[in-house]
Image 1 (cartoon, rainbow, N blue to C red):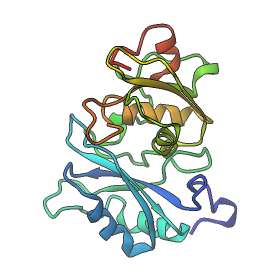
Image 2 (image 1 turned 180 degrees about the horizontal axis):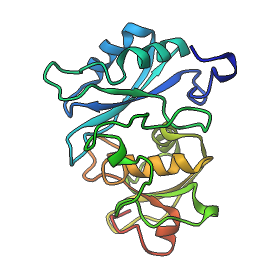
Image 3 (image 1 turned 90 degrees about the vertical axis):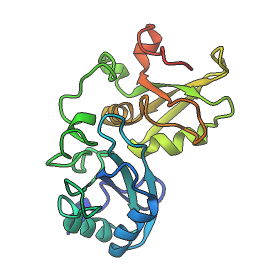
Length: 233
């Protein structure tokens, strides 16, 4: 077990829960399946499923346990061991999320297999056309969020983006695009949280199930200089 001085590095802000990242899941994996697996290690407070990744078809999720010991036991018993399906090519990855510098890496060590939710989706040395140009130091915690529905609330955004770390500020912009979609700026307390949100959500996550398109998540300085907000919103 983790020592007393490290008992809350991955505690979910404001909920008292302990959050785990789960990767390498089949694209059709459902919340009920995860709950059945993880409930064996303790009370599960919440499961947040992410949509399948377009390239690999794999998906990931966040599981929040009530007790730290339950989260630790799940990692020891399941990480790179448990097959979610009998014919699964690889076991699932169960690691601490990187929402706090004291905690282990977000994508785990070793990372998920190539082509899944892991190194390809935001491991060390993040780069790629979807990531945008790297901002100056003063702006490495602020991101732009576009393609939001007109009735979106600040609380809705906080629920989604606090999954990746402490959200310090959300600025909802009043103007809308010609399509009626809205946008916002989200400021994190840590640079890594902003990086993870961009890599996991941009062009993939739909804020509503019936949304026509996924949201845009870019570095704020890309949008402000006119270089990264072209997906609408």
